[in-house]
Amino acid sequence: MGLAPSKQLDEVGSAADRSAGPSTIRWPQTGEVIEHGPNRYLIGEALGRGSYGATYACTDQWSNSLVVKVLIPNQQTYEQVRVNWQREITSLLTLRHPNITYVYDAFELSHTFHIVMERCGGSVTALFSLPDYDGDDWLLPIARCLLQAIGYMHDHGYVHKDIHLRNLFWTYVRNELMPHNSQSVTFKIGDLGVSRLEREIRNYRPTVPWMVAPEVLDETRFGPAGRPTDIYHAGLVLLAIAMGIEPSFTADEILRGVPRETAEQLSPPFGPAIGQALRRKVDERTPTAFEFWRALSLR
Image (cartoon, rainbow, N blue to C red; front, side, top):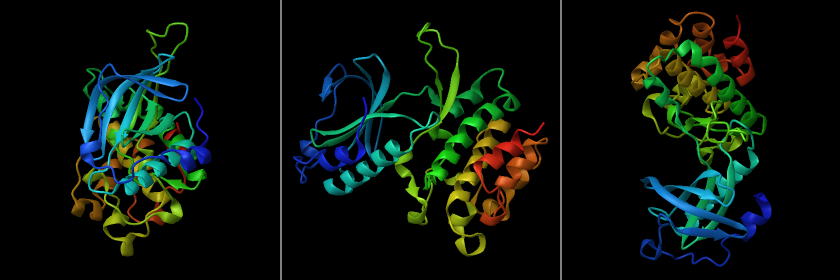
């Protein structure tokens, strides 16, 4: 189910009605089969809806467990949404990595924009409710996956800029010999549509307010947003994994360095390693994802 990036983005939707409004939009229906080229998708339950559109479970003709993300014009024009959709596809097609959610297909249909991706099990926040949860057991396996993905993005010139607990997913790895009884788990970063080439990064507000980086609150004092912003967000995610809860920091606490102070209370090597990633000034943080991993994995 390969997707040729340049041809796909140049040709897709060339006959679409750019002036389509909400009244012309047709939402997918449970049980409906959508065909695009050689691919057939059976639409399942609706998983969620927001200002961007909606997400549905689906399977393809190979019985892969997938989701289809349907984007719609809302506060933006049809062409503006199309540009954002193309940006998300470009990011997903460029950033092919085992620890980044995988895109299968993309197309326009019924005045909406579709992205078909693998379906993950859920966000890592679900782990906190496990009866025997121990952050020390989970931290390194999650960190290895998370930091590999970040390192790969940075090596290709991208910055995610909005990594948080709800777009870091756990998922089972399919065992072809026992496809309905897999016990192998891996972790993947999603929401690549918000990623930008580092040279295009501008100030922004993150999806989760307590995960705002100091440089977003005060660039003059702490430096510009960029790769170190992803390192900071990774530090916050791993702090939460270690603690087994989703902490909450006010803007004032972030500016005073409370996240770093909280991390440094953890036992070595986790405390010092995460604390270094949570330094307020971007040039004082751990410089790369691999160095962050190396500091965490010291035993």
